Length: 125
Image (cartoon, rainbow, N blue to C red; front, side, top):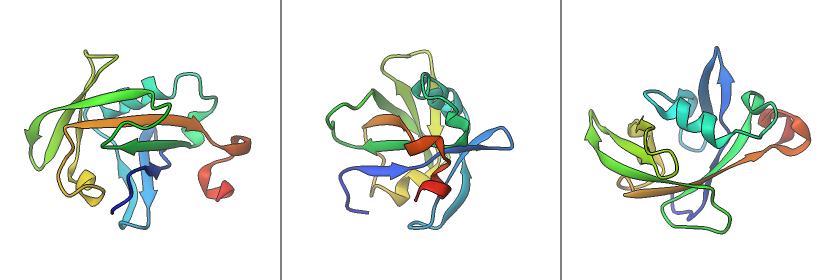
């Protein structure tokens, strides 16, 4: 993908954060190993985020991003990242990250936003 800003729409499925993205062939792709805790921090203040929220991310800073996530190293084809504002939280982003970037970025800039009308993304779009 060549977009500078990318969006996915995570939601809870069977108590796990997952997302679908038909553009890259992912269905109920789970977030694991610390990333659910990162998402929990990003969605604080978003009512009913478990039904879905918009996660915008980029390898470059963008207006009103809310968090920087720094790459710490590679492991099993994925990459470990640490949150700038919550340095005690580390998470592993699986190789699905490479569906969005040619190589894993050293820094990811992210923003979580409430969906329109408190509806899950699949009912909004």
